[in-house]
Amino acid sequence: MAHRAQFQRAVLMALALVGSDAFAHGAGFQRETIAATVVRFGYSTGEPMGDTDVIVRAPDQSIALRTRTDRDGRVAFVPAAPGEWRAEIDDGLGHEVTATVQVADDGAATVRGEATQLAIPQSALLLLLAASLLGNIVQAVRGRARHGASH
Image (cartoon, rainbow, N blue to C red; front, side, top):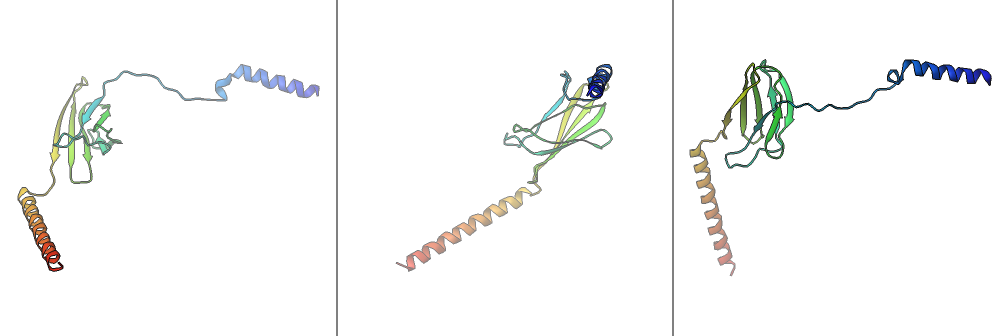
């Protein structure tokens, strides 16, 4: 029993000498104040492109970040180096937008954008609209003809 007590005291003394950092670690955070680049994506109607996949590319075209816009269509990132950064968004419905962020050596950023519209020419949309309208008229006439014949 005396040997056990001596062993326990030796272990406690060794722990006290080494310190608790050797046996455990934790996690935490530090607050930093940094300038982030925020880009807002939206449709021509003013509706935000919320909750949409975004890829941010570094100047060497590597993927620096994969994320989603917030509900207001915003994405924020911190460019790690000067150069041309690109935030690319695709809603999967034919709307693709690329925001190019030019970051200067002093960290100042300027943003310009390139948007692609749906790849359907306006004349084709008008033709589809006319065909739909004609189809609806034909269906309405046929429906009335059937309804009149049954009475």
